[in-house]
Image 1 (spheres, rainbow, N blue to C red):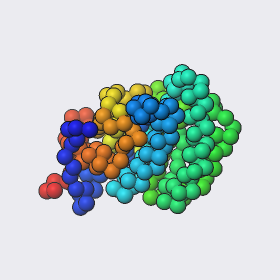
Image 2 (tube, rainbow, N blue to C red; image 1 turned 90 degrees about the vertical axis):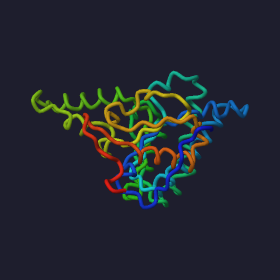
Image 3 (cartoon, rainbow, N blue to C red; image 1 turned 135 degrees about the horizontal axis):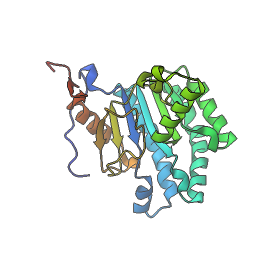
Length: 252
């Protein structure tokens, strides 16, 4: 890809220069496969391999939380054979990579509506979460059958079920019921594949995230692209409601 941001060294950077939480829309698997005259399934398979690599690369750079958009609530509209293949791929990926991720200190969390997936897939997720629950190197949150609007609605439903009084219902209360309430809001929001939209991903949590878009297709997203995204983040001045908050500590 031409015009890549100039890389800057991250070693020795101020702690705030490294995002604590990174969110990623992993886009471009289908196009990656099509460019190689392969079925879309092979692009999704290559995307899983890229994710496993990315988890460790982000962890090595000090990122504590990585949330990836694996399957949106709108993806059910895709051809049935592709959806079925994706479900099978998830089971294969858990079997193939769970031991490695657990050994690498990765904690796995699944976020999204689990009601539409098979009992077998739900059980595999529960086992992955249980096996890695004490790991602390990095938390990998996989958003599956997830949508930002769904997340807000389900949080509101929880509040209504609890009988919260209108005067007690505020942003903090709603945030505590969101699917990603265990993680801080993402500092950096990355989308691969050249599209420049959020696609209903983490709409509530990404209100003040720094955005980074790249033409790189997800299966090709590796060391160079991760360092480019983190370098771009380190050069941003974060603003929360107009208050300037430098990412890099003063004097660096």
